[in-house]
Amino acid sequence: MRTTSGTDFIGKYGKYGLPILSVVLLILNGVNTFVLYPTNAENLAVTMLGVYLAPTIITFWLDRKKSAEKSWKALVKVLQDKQRLGVADA
Image (cartoon, rainbow, N blue to C red; front, side, top):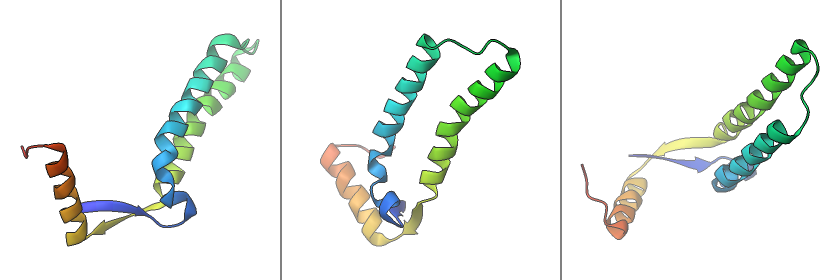
């Protein structure tokens, strides 16, 4: 059984990453919807490349702040969580 844990301050508080990423993507969607686009194709291409690559790069960087660990303690924790949630093994 594998699990991850944070390697530093950013990794330890990574559980807030998905809600923050969701808010950032909603903001980017609003910007794409309501802001005027550049007038020529080159500026538009560079803008869209930045808009879509920035969250990807940030997500990859945050994922690198985690380390995988194998342990019986992790296995017991997962099994207890499954039992508490009533999830059956497939």
